Image (cartoon, rainbow, N blue to C red; front, side, top):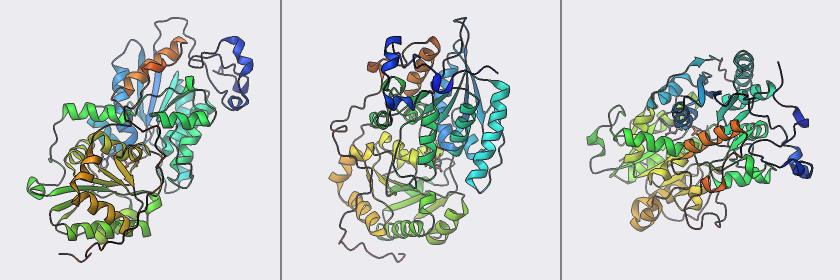
Length: 461
Ligand code: UDP
């Protein structure tokens, strides 16, 4: 098999890098680390289509790559797209793909064990065989999952270029979120094309020594997904397990919590806060789709089950969950994707994490990173329930994450890469129009405030 690129010998006069040959020698030492910059396919015929393999393993990958797949498939003369699922979270991943009318072309059926290392090893092994057999021109991966990391690594070993959608996110804490922070850093390091969603994500990459030409800011594709699906589907409670009468004259608080870092004590403190909110505010109904992981399900059903105004429902299809997000007064979550979705829908958000790699919403005043302490959750939730002016300021829609054109930019970037042109003109990149966002101190860490106020009883009423 002919290698596509020459390891550390690869001259970086590649598309996107767009360096004139004379500048090659002046590449900074920092960039020495990033010379794995494979060439696009040798396109002797301009008519040759770019063969893109796109891998998804989990629900967020399906949601965030759905609009990209649709945009690429809308240009059949330029791209041949193969959608591959790993099987990491098969059912909910397939259900999310179905929201976009997509089905997998191939399912690699990896064995998902309880050990991360086993799942990663299986994706690596099976995906390596897939790539050897199929030789796509480029592999697209999204985010920070085990599937994305191991598939990217298999491509790197097989010298297939990788494009990383949602590159550059950093919490700078390998334990939070675990193992995603390590996964995304590894994928960035071995990718040919990096697609940061926001200026901050790009800045993280520049700080790590990547050249800006190689990592154009595209916006987050989740905003494309929301726009696409909201336009096609009016909100409905059908299939959510919630009746219209449950919500009549009541404010909906939507909660999701499943992060590995919260299992155990933190999940219990979150549940105590949720129950106390429901007990003390009769005009509130809490809806919580319960994650199937036994570490989550056991505590959540034990602490929150049986309350008349806390509705525990199974994981919802994306269209159903989106409907609830659109109806929500307030969202509490530790999810990554929902941190981008809630501000995009203009719904105030409390982030149940100690640290976030998506601080833009907090910087823009649309979200607060509040951790998992019961008193802190109550403090922030009651303030938003009780103070209209505070609520209104947070609900002001303005989107730091995207403008709904990320997929269009990714199509343009891949086309330019194939043609050997610069990846994306700066004026075409995504720039959030939110005042003060850039200047704000990074609020990626949890804001703790003195509470001091009584929060009422956590006894059921
Ligand atoms: N989501 C969904 N159904 C649910 C809960 C969440 O479709 O019952 C969606 C949610 O809107 C978001 C994505 O799933 O787009 C987030 O997935 P998850 O929280 O599993 O992963 P993370 O975003 O933390 O990586």
